[in-house]
Length: 396
Image (cartoon, rainbow, N blue to C red):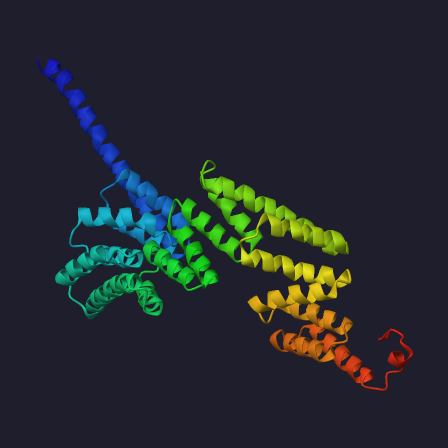
């Protein structure tokens, strides 16, 4: 009887013994990973520390302290999106863990999720009131008011006030994609395209699917005549969605212009002035509607016209570029050279002087100014060439 009972009980005892042994071994392994992770964290070796914290959580998924520690490492590495699920889990496991609530509130505030941040700070302040939490609550309220005010003033068409409130809100919510999107739109409306592009570029880093943002950036670059950057951004759009119904046709259009522009620059390098003018006309025909692309062509063809002996055309094209940007270096220098050929010394001196002032240190402008002043001085002497009806030639 005793022998039969012994046979019946022993397997159960063996199973219990194995479970205890496994639990003890698991605890030992958990403690070992925690110890190693903490040591690496103290040395600032965040990535290595993370691997040990991952192992701890795999073995003990309810260890809220290690979940919190892993979240803080993620935050130190700038990976707030990975930190949030850990902080959510910590608060779920231990509602009164105020440090986790404060950290989560900080992330939510930066992301522009103001209501969630307010809730965390309020609960943390209820458990452990402090001046710091009181200040965080005030910041949340002020940021929320600024974001709402920006939308109101945007609807009213008040650009400057909108920008003021958007910039104020972004001071505390720098990861809020909606604020950058709105500010980019405002900058574009105000004609500050480069600032709009800067905000849209930030947006692509904040939003996982940035297809539309890359498309918008490409179009903005196109409007300012920057074909190379436009092509780069539209390629990013196609990387995310090769079948995008708007990106692909625009890509073909920009790529064609880019090749034409490369060909135009090549003609200049080879001093093929008439071929340069032909290529310029091809680009103007391919894109007759975007002013900045036309001006970019004129910036090149005014030189080609001057070199080809078409002086009046060169002056006209340089002047058109300068109407868009009065300090454009290439246009100022090229027009000055054209004026010298026409013996319009005062006009040449004025252009060279402006180029020297707006582009301090540019050698072409400095040397050109000295040469123009010398030529004017020589021309002021008695002109025997004119008396004899012979073309003046300067050897300088």
